[in-house]
Every structure is written in C-alpha cells, then in structure tokens.
Image (cartoon, rainbow, N blue to C red; front, side, top):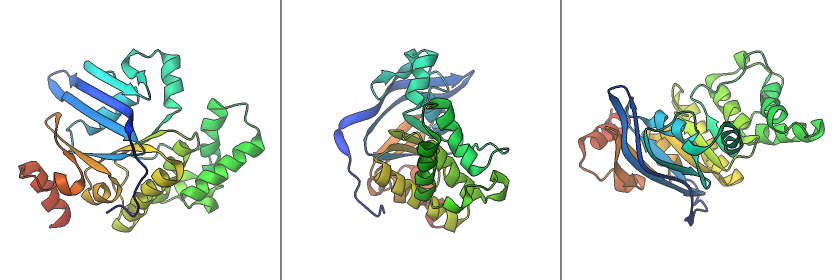
Length: 257
C-alpha cells in the first residue's frame, strides 16, 4: 500500500467530469463517464486495452474534444477554451506520455530547459539551471544532465519525462501507463517516484494503468473502466472485493499468474 498518508483536501475538486461521451465512428469509447479528482489525491484509472483510459486523459488535457458532457479542470471548462486559454491551462496540467516523448537530438539538460525557454522566456539562465537541478534531483538522475536520450534506459527515460513535466510545477499530473514495458524493479522505482512527486510537489494525479501493483501502491482511490463506463470506484481493497468478472480477472492475472 502507499508508504505515506497524502494531504488530500476533500472539499476542493481540481477535476470534475460529468456525462462524458466520446466515439470514433461506430466505436463508442466513453459512455457517460463521471469522475472527480480532489486536491492532493492520486486516482488510478484501470481498464483493459481499448476501454478509453488514454482517451479520457487526452480529453482532460484538451488534446481531444468530447462528443458530450462537461470537463472542468481547475475551474475551466476545457472543451470551451480557445487555443490561448488551453495553452495557459496546460501549463498547470502535466502530461506524462507513455514513451517519455523526449527530443532525441537534445541532451537531458536541454530537454528539461526546452519547456522553460518556450513558456517562461524571461527566466534567467542561472534560475533555469537551478530548476533543472531540482527536478533532476527529484527523479534521482542528476548525473544524466549531459547525456542523450539514446544513452538512457527505458526507466531513466520515463523518469526524465516526469522531470520535464515537473519543471513547470503543474498542479495536476496525468500519467499514461507509467510502468508499461518496464521490468519489475524499474516499475517499483517509477511507482515510488509517483508517490514522491505527490508528496514533494503537492500534485493531484490521474494515473492510467492496467498494472495492479502500480494501482495498489500509488492510488488513493481506484476507478475501473468497462465498456466505456466506470463500474467500480473506491479504495483498492473496496474495489477488489467486487464479484465483477472483469475485476476478478484483473486481480488473478496480476497477482496469481
């Protein structure tokens, strides 16, 4: 379970989703989804491949538009924002892509400097360097600052991807399959890092995964997607007391086989 008790403000909702629908042609991916994320909370969204987990966080980040429903993030109705307003909101919402999304032609330090130069050009170089040092220390990779992404392991690239997202100090973190394709030891390191980010940077997070160890260790609450709807929400233990076949299959696959 989580190694610490997070400071969650249950009276403040940072993401509120109601009646969310999204289809691609005849493929009805989300069918009336409701979800609340509170300040300081980590919510894990579980589901089989193709159930709409990644579509959900892309809608939250404004990368996709819903067909119907409301998506309120930090007081802003995301689908109604213009490009400038959406850009401003994204500075407060960090999106950690599944494969890290680093620029191969840049060193680690240059990758971390890029969002600062682009979004906060008035920051002096010495201030920028200090911010880079802070996030590299947070992910435990200070020694990689002059390395190229090709020289890093898969786990290190994931860590640097998280560091690059953190450098703008977002209020919300969106993690898309943070442990996918990693060995068990590296998965543990990434799970610990997600908890450290929540604790050190006071973030609220939605974590998309099908890894139950990740869900159990990082999630304050769990929401299970099935056929475009949430079928269970609650603590890990509460969710996995369910008799739903999908939930039983998830548990058996992760912890028995």
